[in-house]
Amino acid sequence: MSGAPDPGAGPVEIRSDVVLPARREDVELHTADGLTLVGELALPAERDPVATLVTLHPLPTAGGFMDSHVLRKASYRLPALADLAVLRFNTRGTSSPRGTSEGTFDAGGAERFDVAAALELAEFRELPRVWLLGWSFGTDLALVHGRDPLVEGLILLSPPLRWSTPQDLRAWGELGRPVTALVPELDDFLRPDEARERFAELPQAEVVAVEGAKHLWVGEPSVRRVLDEVVARVNPARSPLPTTWPPS
Image 1 (cartoon, rainbow, N blue to C red):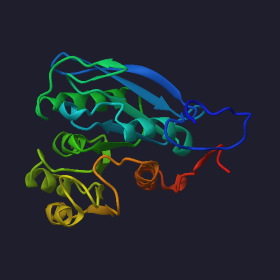
Image 2 (image 1 turned 90 degrees about the vertical axis):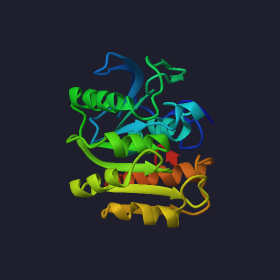
Image 3 (image 1 turned 120 degrees about the horizontal axis):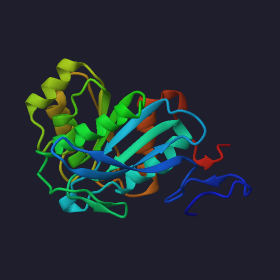
């Protein structure tokens, strides 16, 4: 089933592109170097959010964008299931059905302005308890550019540690804020044993090995595992997530 569930049809299983109720609005982010980025903010339908996920998508030159499926499903589900605000946006030069953000891809350099613009929007909208949720390239953006007083912690999906350095990890260690890395057992770039070694620079890092998962988290079991792990850290009172709507 895809789209919004029929409220009169009884509980439905949450799968694939089921879109749960939320207040959704298109937003624009304005960077310090003069660009306009396109995005979407999803809020709980009938209450204020208890925490916020600012999402950072995978590598745009490899097909990553704000609609990359795990981030899209987070926005479809977590406002309703976990009372979270979910902000998604296209980094500079990235296109999606929402539109194209101005600028050009800069391999994680000028994207520091994009991360800052997303956090500024969260602050302007008075969104509570901001966490960065990065995936692949987005994890490097979080580690390199996310050390902001507004950010309570990081959740990193399939971190390649490609652009982030041991110095970045040590800087997060000094901040002491929670960092969770969800590392697929069958990842193409960084697998759990090596991830544990490399994240040793960051003492509070929690490396969670996910058996059977791959870099792209394909399949509903992988998506559910990711979203459960996210909610367990950001709003543990709503974990584990229900698998039907309305929740049984």
